[in-house]
Length: 536
Image (cartoon, rainbow, N blue to C red; front, side, top):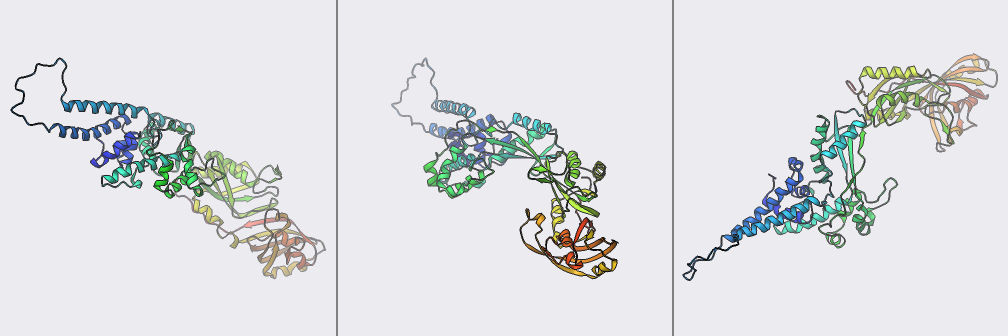
């Protein structure tokens, strides 16, 4: 039996007569028992008809119980029996009521619901569950649970508002209260019906409210714009065109407009109850999506002709590979991800080696079809990357949290970086000519945006500090310069001066033209990354 009460009868009558399906009637009666929605809709409709007829039968019975008193003039002689059998008045009314109920029942079963547009009728059931499961299995995801998401056409909000106004007056006349927020949402009812069916088809995989793996079901309707068009005229500020949306009639915009429009104005422009729809909704392609997985580690770069990221100038690729691609290719293949976002703690120029402990990096893997790797498997993946190229080497490869990625970038400008540069001097030098550099501490530079990066960085003067330097004499025109600097210092520009855009610079200190031949960044600082515990 449906968990309905006497107070629900006017709502049931109103909505059935308005062309709403049985499950939408339950929603407006605020029935939150999930089993009621899983019941076959024709059985639910019959129960609703019986529920209404109980009330009608009671009225008929009360009328039949009122009989005229017998009088002396009453006919005492029995009339001959009629050839045509006569029905008892109560039976006659009952027959008419049953006939009317059957007509309504057939009509409800064959027509598209004026409220959910068929979503809670023929668009949710075993057939739809089979389609969902076939899609999931075909895409070969690795998952233990899934969450079912539903996208509905925005006009459902308009039709629901119309039905709510339709029953609100009746309910208030009975001295009852129906809060719009208490009405069960179509999405919820759809999920209650489908969750068990999908779980059964997936042989026990639970459909839950929160999971890293999401299966999205979308419905559209051809009359969405015509149903919502009046709202754009009444509340134009609620509908603003956006680049990524095909229609201005998004659910959020429609809800906002319905909150703003008055009941009187709504009823002037939209029928109440809503008119019979032209047809049911159309299910779109089922979409599967796994939340991102985050990978972090450190890399060393050993060659001087490898950019950190793909190097493309004026649409033309300049280098055949990059650090990012050498690391990402094996990882993408192992996790079967659709794409990735690469980030690192700082970056080096194409001709700069990265030595020491290695530069911290992180990757966001988009829609990975596989997401669980043990520590042993991550170690094997790291070895695979290192064997694929002698230009780079990766260490400490691990799965991390999203928060760990953001922490990697925190304080980047406050870090101290260590460099080693091979410097050429125009004039001949001795060891004594450069030894004074060892004593320079906390030298503050004013660096105007270098010419080589002016196309991608704003013109500005940035102050940076060189904390200490040391020199190692090589020959009369070369020496090694070691530097510990504030992060963000342009080392090449400090050495050659960049046409006076960096002051002071090494040319001014040595009173001769200087240039940089080689540069290595030595990463010594340790960025702690929170690893995901256990098997990943």
